[in-house]
Amino acid sequence: MQHEFTIQVSPEVAAYPDRLKDSVAHKNGIPKTEIRHIEILKRSIDARQKAIKVNLKLKVYVEEDFVNNPIKLPHYPDVSNAQEIVIIGAGPAGLFAALRCVELGYKPVVLERGKDVQSRRRDLKAINRDHIVDEDSNYCFGEGGAGTYSDGKLYTRSKKRGDVNRILELLVGFGATDQILVEAHPHIGTNKLPNIIAAIREKIIELGGEIHFETRVIDFEIKNSQINGVTLFDKSTIATQKVILATGHSARDIFELLYRKKIEIEAKPFALGVRVEHPQQLIDQIQYKCNVRGPYLPPSPYSIVKQVAGRGMYSFCMCPGGVIAPCATSPGEVVTNGWSPSKRDQPTANSGIVIELRKEDFEPFAKYGPLAGMYFQKNIEQQAWRVGGETQRVPAQRLVDMTNGKMSVNMPVTSYKPGLTSADMSTVFPGFIHQVLQKGFGAFDKSMKGYLTNEAVVHAPESRTSSPVRIPRDWKTLEHIQIKGLYPCGEGAGYAGGIISAAIDGEKCAQACIEALKP
Image (cartoon, rainbow, N blue to C red; front, side, top):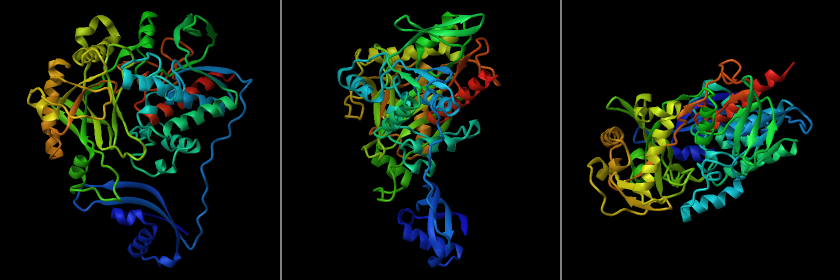
């Protein structure tokens, strides 16, 4: 017989199956000898009290053998000769749209401006070591999209958008650990995600789909408000009446193209701020209320949300045991982001700390119409590049110094490989952003006593939290409200915020596109 229980135990008990069996037997009045297997369905850590607990949802097999049914991929037919659907972008939205096309018997033709995951590594090394930014191959552009080298965080609050478990199970089918089905805040790790992305690509190609790297789309062929094809960087064209546009939140050239062609887009509020790095040991001490983190606890994350001067200020994309990376997509700008390896075993923790922006904040760039937010974002990134010495060195300031408006006379070594330039953050950000950040860190310290310390270093800016543009689509057909056959998709279109929600949206757009193709 199978029973489901929710139980709270110590980290030590959770770590050892035999101890867990003892605890389940004792708390539920089941003879231990009758428990043949315990399957952990969900796991989370409760660190609110001094005695840290692990919350577990369990399936307990009592006098019944456990049969392991490994996750299998769906049946994917050969689509070599099937009708084609063009997908622009090979991030999670584009790749999962392609998989869904194959599953439903259609041939995806994926056009990706960047390189495959392995080739991208050389260009990431060039940013970190030589400060060279390749506009087509970087932390944001290339196979797998921005999430591939931003550690594959899989947590999403968008549970109503679609079947989250389906996406997680597909990732497991392509090689991810099945622990992503269990953890409350799953992640894969930058060291492991590229192999999973490559496995998805190989499956699509094996079944007759196409993926073309280093293939930038520069124009859309439109007649009578119907998409008829796309023009590539070499001036060649691909005729098609169905295009899934999944180019990501940093595809500024696509936003510019849509604006020039008078294809309707709209400004979208987003969040912007800094990336703050602490010693991981300090975050562990604050969160776990201990001097030394025990062997059964993972490096601690944190999540803070505050209202400061009438604006939301919150942690974003927090990376325990992680690294800060240079994520510019064009020369002449500085952008930061963070990632963690699968073990989260680096000595530092970092998180984006961002504030909510409003459309009225973009007023100085109103001449750019719906691109005003994008130019607001771009202006700060270019200013950071100038302040940093016109390199990928990031403007940086110790955290207490920033809140006091004091220059940091010496800077520690941080995980950001291109290096730091000591700077006053008021020279990077507009006054209202700087002031909210200064005030907000005091509020953060009230929630996490010890957070406000000069051991922490502020790196600027964290600016690519989400797309500054929304590409409007019909809520039912998912087509663009003006152009038939064009399906705006994922983060870049303003309909997702992370790997899982982007993948869900990719599947939905593929499904809608195929529904429109059916007789």
